[in-house]
Length: 400
Image (cartoon, rainbow, N blue to C red; front, side):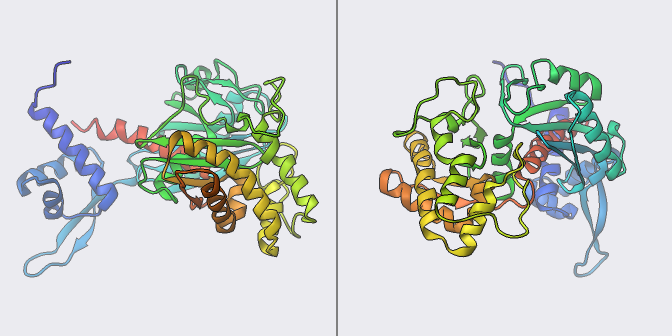
């Protein structure tokens, strides 16, 4: 494949992109600091900043006091030069967030989808509410990512199947793009949680790790070489179907609760284990904190167990989770496992430490196991991370 010649136009575009990324990660910066970090001369850095100011991508945001002479102007990326939307779609709740190009969350809303079957109308309504709350028009959006349960076909971008959201079928993505007039992407919710973990959480900057989503349903987000691994059909990470000794194999894969590992650690299993240990949800608990369709919260059982110091319950739960974690570890050998989902987050460091110890007893690779450190809704935050990557590619690559 022939390489592109280093034309002045191309070089300016590359310099502009590098400067904008630097201002986002390390800004605000003076012209001299920008030149020092990029290797550009003061003259070239000044021309670059003038060009970006003319495009309303960069503005003076303050001053830096120096020695003799006038203070140096500080430059930063204009937050309002682009906006993105992220959605977390559950059977009983839709959460939508708007972020500016810097990644700052400027609005977040929730909507009840009950009684509405059309995914396009649901999404349009949630996006309109979020944009109204942010005080911007939908036409200001540059990218839009939806996180949803189910398997997303990596070839078409459509939801291949979802047990919880049957109306999300092939063709929905095209309808959303036509209706909204914005680049739309649908992504598996656990994959987005992994993106959020790498951007803001316990896997910050880590290129190889696995996020284990433990809750009513089970899932994996697999990050290899800094990129999500989705699999040939998009089904990588469906760990609920992992065969487990002592648990029956599924006879009908259309039944979402019939997977062997799901039977071992799913919502019904955790609730049964809690009952056997005399543990119930604590007073004042949120019965829908995990977004499960039946309104139960397995996380509250785990949270109560941690608060009461119910070591026997936590040890047994950790041993069950370790079966799946060890299976992943011997295949992928990640150095880091992050526990997330309602059960993982509720168990916190106490559960993570027990899972690590249990895995070390049966697995030669012995990965480090930690709890998620992402604040707020990890799926929504991951959707915004993905949308920002797309928007910055558009905006920062079109400066000339």
